Amino acid sequence: MSISEEFQANIEALPNIIQRKYALLRDLDKSLQEIQKQNEQHCEQEIDDMKRGIKSGSIRPNSSFLKFTDDAVDEQKHAIRIADEKVELAVQAYDLVDTHIQQLDQYLKKFDEDLRRAERDAIAATPPTHYMNVKAGRSGKTSNRGRKKTCVAAANVSVVSPSGTGATTAANPSMELDLPVDPNEPTYCFCNQVSYGEMVACDNPDCKIEWFHYGCVGLKEQPKGKWYCSDCVGSQRRRKVR
Image 1 (cartoon, rainbow, N blue to C red):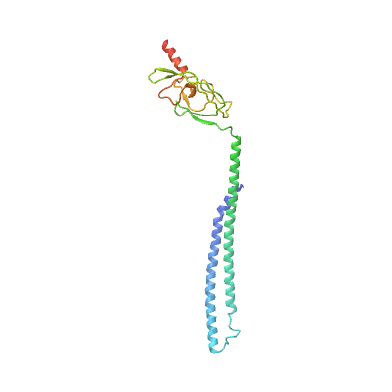
Image 2 (cartoon, rainbow, N blue to C red; image 1 turned 120 degrees about the horizontal axis):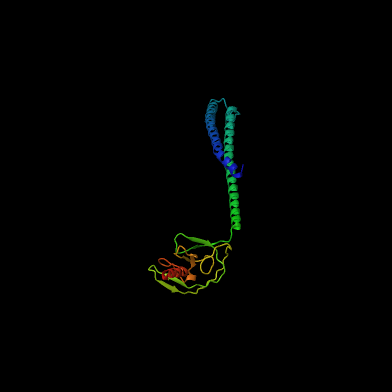
């Protein structure tokens, strides 16, 4: 049985044990009240007898008869024993609950240590953290890949507006990236590099490259309407010439 199973079994049995101890406490308290009431009546009767004896002269004020009988004293001792049993039961109930609280604290401490150890092991076994990119151009498509240190030069691109007219834009940005990269990670764009930063997708479903870095195609924000890379624009023009 594991520690958690053992603790669960103990905690499930605790309410019944406490309930039995409380029931016994109630019985003892009832008995104690009855004995105390009986003893009070007994002592009051004996005190009245002493007063009458003093008035009649049969008992002198300093007589040895001025004391409670053995029966009254025994009743008082019995009441004290019952009170001691009540205290003992209360202490047992307290200690029982306290023991379970300490076990719970130990169990939670061990659980927390195991959880932290599992997190450290998971971090140690996880490859370098990858950068999450949300590429523009096609909704719902994302990439989660790392960056690497490289200098990327932009290519000349052609942008086709929704009306079909093309405009050529030249850009020559360069960016230096210094993050870990998976050697098996796929590459994109004219620069044949991994995904990073903002990217745009060519709207030609037959595009061989498909995804492009903003800087490599001279974009600073997501284009409005459909967007085609320079290769696909050239192919469209050649088909029109034919």
